[in-house]
Length: 117
Length: 112
Picture 1 (cartoon, chains in turn blue, orange):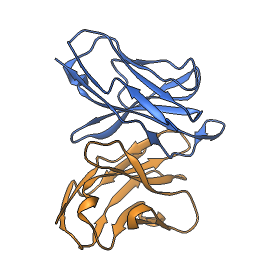
Picture 2 (picture 1 turned 120 degrees about the vertical axis):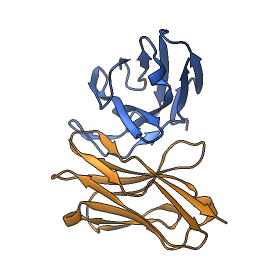
Picture 3 (picture 1 turned 135 degrees about the vertical axis):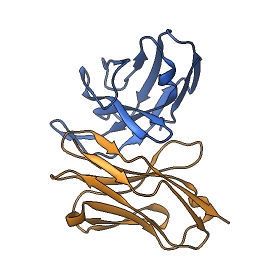
Picture 4 (picture 1 turned 90 degrees about the horizontal axis):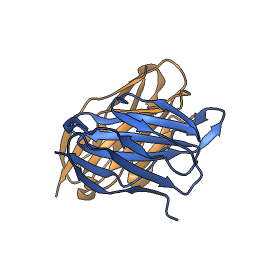
């Protein structure tokens, strides 16, 4: 039971480079989320997706792009990385309960620690 | 938009002490409420949840939380903490909008 996996777990990149963080879940949960975790800010939602081909902005979407062509994958791309995007990124999924509603119970991946130099 | 406030940023306790972590939210409609725990170096995992019914919910490892609707609160409690409870604790609120909002977290340090 793999659950939800993120890759890479650690990444160091330079300012201006494009970076893609991958997220894969095996539960067929309809909802998927990307959060960033920073000291003093808790978890902030970047983007989320209610189903394949349905995505929406969260609290801090600027500088990020997402796609969801398949239910099980939800990659997060930093098109031109900046130092302020140095963070730990968590992918999560949640089971839908019909319509555009989910239970709210989140299952998290192990996190991807990104450092932008 | 909903918001979640956790009153204690860092709590230090000795083993066997009782714990209460405060959580208040701002949202006037129906909510689902959660507490997550993040042990050092690990990902977040669910501690307990409230959807409806009995406002006193029990979770894993002896934790419980009480939902008080009139106070918009969902405080976490444990009668006797252990060193292994050292972790960061997050309160979260989910509404019918489909996304969860987290508090800033409370770091709990339990001294042996």
